[in-house]
Amino acid sequence: MKPSELSAELSVSFGNWLKTLDPGVLLVNLFELSNEMALYLVNQDQQVVFWSSGLARMTHFEPETQMGKPCLNALQIKENRTEMIQLLGPDKQKRLFNLNARVLLNNVGQSAGGVGWLSLSEAQLNPMGAIKLKPHSATQNFHGMLSRSPAMEAVFHIIENAAQTEATVLVRGESGAGKELVAKAIHSLSARRHAPFLAINCAALSSNLLESELFGHVRGAFTGAIKDHSGLFQRANGGTLFLDEVAEMPLDLQAKLLRVLQERNYIPVGGSQTMSADVRIVAATHCSLREQVKLGLFREDLMYRLRVVPIFLPPLRERREDISLLIWHFIVQHNDQNIRVIEKIDPDAMKVLLDYRWPGNIRELHNVVEYAFAVGRGAILRLSELPPEFNEQRSAQIITPARQSREKLTEENARDLIRQALEQNKGRPGAAAAMLGMSRATFWRKRRFYKV
Image (tube, rainbow, N blue to C red; front, side, top):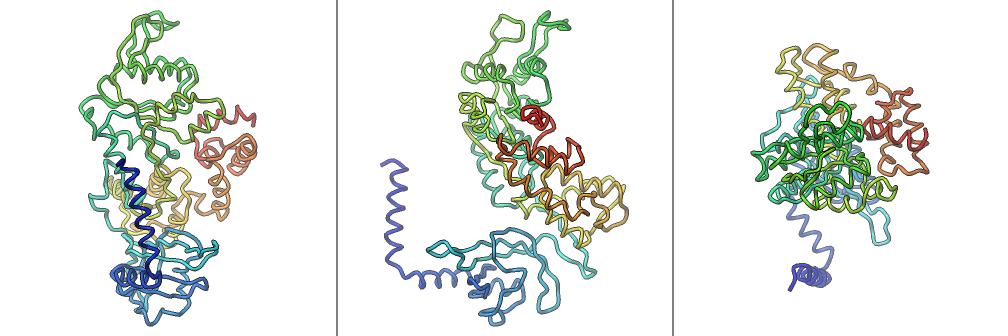
């Protein structure tokens, strides 16, 4: 029996067995087993219907004081959310928690309440009301990628498995999310780790320069080619080549790249001799290659060759539990320079940092910490030391529509979105590109394509 058939049979068997049980009895037993977890349930009126003993120990609120009562405001579950919250306990102590909450639906698809799970945050309030961050543990560092997010754990698992093969990998993620770190991790864990790791941004060079950089050229191939030039495929022989923003590669070069992947050889610019290519390709893009194929901007056959193992890198806004971890990581880095030593973060500043949508992801977060070190002094990072956009109430409104639509940039809405981004950023292309999750080169190309 095939594994897929066995899995289907087990699934049917489990479903049939589940139908024989009383749902209420099953849930009660599951909740009793989960008493060690910090778990709670609310009904459709946001009244507490279950409060585990583990949650009582963590929050200091006893079950008898919560059951049947309206849920604490910070714990109400009206939408799916993952964020840091602050609770004032019955002992008058403020504590910070990571909350994961999910809405529960009844059999007609209406909200029937929700389930929430709490864990202690690495960040905690000191007696003076400022937030002091605890250093991360070494186990949270995966080849330079810091995370405690379950979504990233899944990414790390795929990286470890894919690295043991020679399969081509396509990393999909927004600008600043850490796509090159993924590529470097794959290289470091692979059998090619002792050979070169080279990278190139396909959006940063013109077509001619990109072709020369990738495949090299021979003397006299074009004006200025006064000697032979080794391309990246030759210099990375035996190792890994990272092609960032591969969706921006011109169609004629896509055909040449396809040949390398299929035949494992290529011809330098202006040359006649075929050269072998023993290189593993890891490509990256911030956009959907399928959408690029539909627009006629990317070859379908190359897309399938590149995305043998697709890895989707979640943006920072979907990894809320990582924000404080990364803030502390970058603060420690800058503290070591002894220009300024930050030990605490003002609660108002931390709230703004946690609520921010981070369109530029980890790169933007690093820049924000660097800005705070440059403009402020003292041991406490204050709200006034954050970049201007953090002090503008309209910043959240600016980011939201662009965030919702940047993965669906079609001809119908592209012009309006690009025009809106430019207006909201006072005509600054770089800021508008960051808002839409694009590189400057991609933003420029789409402006030209949509004639904005």
